[in-house]
Each structure stands twice: as C-alpha cells, then as structure tokens.
Amino acid sequence: MKNKYLLLSTNIDHINSLKSIEVTCTTSIESAKILLERDKYDLIIIDDVSGELDTQINKVKYNDYIKDVKKTKSIEKPHKQEVISIYSVKGGLGKTTLVKEIAENLSKNLKIIIIDLNFQDGGSDLSFMLDLPVLPHIGMYLEYKGTKDALMKSVYQYSENIYVLQAPPKIKLAEGIMPNDIMNIILDCRAMFDVILIDLPNMTNELIKKTLDMSTQIVILSLGSRGEIKRISEIQCNSKKIILCDPANNNWKKSLNFLNLPYIKVNDVVQDINKISKFIFGGRQ
Image (cartoon, rainbow, N blue to C red; front, side, top):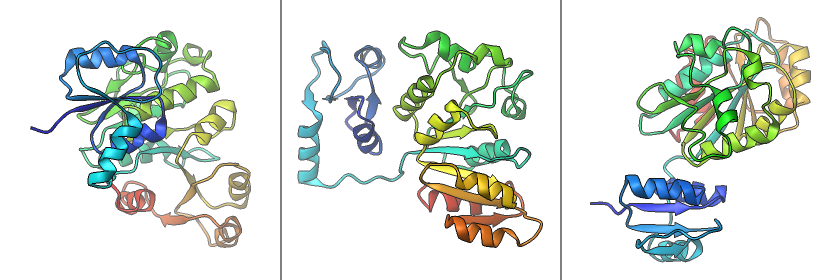
C-alpha cells in the first residue's frame, strides 16, 4: 500500500511541488486536525505554519523532506496546477460555455473547481447552464470566512471531480466581497484543487484586477475588433492568450501582430474544445 503524506504549509510553491506527487496539502493546524481525524497518514511534512500539531505521527520539515527526495529521484509533475481566468472585454462570446467545456473535457483524475464571479440579480448563466441549486454560493464563503472549511462549506459538487463556487442569485448577497477575499478564495482553492477555472464578467474593477493578478493564465475571448484589441492591450497582466471567435474579417491580423500574444482562431468553442484545450494546457492534462 502506498504511503500517505500530509503537508502543512501556507507556501503556494511548496504546496504545488508536493501536490503533484499526491501529497495531501492543508494550510492550517485546524484543518490538519480534521484531516487526521478522517484518515490515516504515515508522515506529516511541516513548513511555515505556526503552532504545534499534537500527534504521534512522524513529522519532518519541508526542506529536509525535499533533500531526501532529491537524493533518490527528482519530483515529476504530471500536471502543472493552473489558475485560469476566462475573460472578454465584451459579452456574448461564450465565456461561460467555454468554462463548462474545459472543465468537462479535462481528465477525470484532476480535481477541478469553477469560481463564478458573474454577479447579477436573477442568477448567473453558469448556474442556469449547470442547473445548480440556489445554495451554496459565494455569499456563504463571505459568511464563513475565517473559519475552518469555509471554502468547502460554500461549494457545490457538480460531478465526481468538478466543484463550483457559484455566484449568488442576488448581487447584494456578495456586495461585501473585497479583493482580499478573492485572494483568499484562490489561495484556498490552490491548496485543494488541480485546476481553478474562473468565469469573469466583461468589466474591469478591483475584484477583476486581483483575480487577473493571481491567475497563471488569462484566456481572452475576442472577435478581433480594433476596439477589443486596444482594450486587451491595456490589461496589465502576464500570460495572456487570445481565442478568436469566428472573426468576420481579417482586420484582426494587424492588431494581433501588434499585441504579440499567442492566439488561436476557432469557429465554435464547443466544436473546437480539443483544439482550445491543447492551446491552453499544451498536452499537460
């Protein structure tokens, strides 16, 4: 039987390095205690979390563990953890459909969460598309924040490996959300999921900026119009990629050459999902 290890750390790089070799990761003493009650672990890897974890299980410091691993073999990453924001500067291009298609076409061995930031009265497109119940939603995370398991109390398990932190049915239920909340949500998700997909509204505010800053990739849907390209050029973030959605003419070519960003042209995000997945993940699914 394969040994089971638990990493207790708030360092995202350390979490990512060990999560890829199936080490269970947690960010607090409280959540570690819950995991230890639920399951049996052979070793606990301690990093930079303050406080004492009272247990008889053998403990080792992260740096010492890594040294021992490197003596035997290098750590291989079968999948690079991604935080992918799906964005556009205008509506109606199929962002939500693309988020759904990406999630459902990834390997079932990957644990995926969709974060829906399309706040609007009456519910979001994603909630209707996936036929989600009204509860839970991101407003509940705001209510539970600062408590253990705040994230998992607020997400809905859509399928065996796909979870959703959905937008609330009314804007006022999330009106207290701040950029720091977005940061904490993404950090919590990175400790538990392999792929974080974020469905963004076609607007710019401090919440959106924080989300883009914390993304490993920003996938932007566009028709390739001059106005869109200009607004895309003003987004001050790295790792931008463009999906051209059936542009009506070839005027976009000069503009895209000016941006010097990777792009693909598709006719339909559903029919071309394999092409899109390869463009985003580069065969690392």
